[in-house]
Length: 432
Image 1 (tube, rainbow, N blue to C red):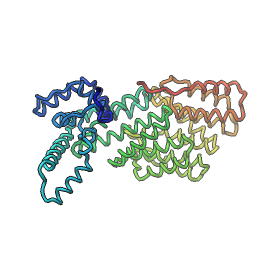
Image 2 (image 1 turned 60 degrees about the vertical axis):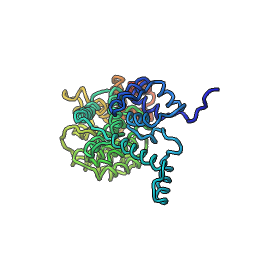
Image 3 (image 1 turned 60 degrees about the horizontal axis):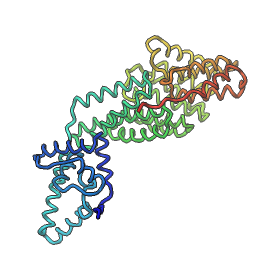
Image 4 (image 1 turned 90 degrees about the horizontal axis):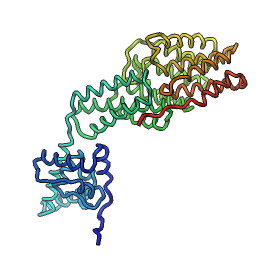
């Protein structure tokens, strides 16, 4: 008669093994190494054992269990390796009983002491030393990602950021000294911010919002101003492009306590944009004036990109288009386009350059003497980029331009051609 299974399949053991990329044979080999390190070379682990434990056909006995806990840097309870009678709640009950009786008792007391001692050993071994060189490499990656967001395909960049974030999370699962843990938490926030930003520009609003929520948890833990402001500003951007200008405004107000010389101009510009979408001209103009006062020339930092004169000119044009000031918007838009096409930046800033071109096109539509053909030509130019340079912000603004043109000039050949090309503008997907 086949042996009856006593437990449910242990999904946590499967998860811990698979997230390390191990087969059951790999796990057994690693467990044998851990046993040797713990001074128990007589213990033997096999792939078949790990298979039985993962299927719930058996559980490791205490000496083996201790090695498995060390292998996966987790407690026996967290790994689902304890019998029902060994749960934390029952241990608390046992401690109460011992206190009432005034002694440990014979067998149960010794078992409790042994379990408590094993738990102390397992807890102490959760603490891991973080290689300073690894932290330096992660810092360098984050600095590179801040620059690469301006020049590389977001679909190509996403898996690189994702890989680093997984490494940081794995380190945070263990224990470190406070200095290393704060450093890892900052890295986790910076990497998750980039995951949110890249997800948004690849058109996945759900993923972007989820990453941004997690990024804020990291950011709030460390309180680093640039990261905190960048996350809140990004959340405001996601809300704005989702058609929620009031929510965008609320999130931008939440960024203001973390305002720095690096982030202040962007917060003000995005605030102006949200006010314009809400048809609040006076507030939009005040925010634009605040943006111009806060412009600085600083290097790129991990977080939002710096707000340069080119970015500011483009923001002024975008907001003025929404306010119906076509002539003023055109002047700023032409300056922005020119600044985005100087030799030093012509091969980078593909997203900002596309948006600047679309702002110029929009200004030509809303001015007193519209130029729909030239606006459609500029729109076509903005979206005629390699697939890997396509982004959500450009797609959304091009759609807004197409809607403006279609209201008055739906049969104009250039307008029809632009609309047709826009339908073929598909966002790339991250590499596996």
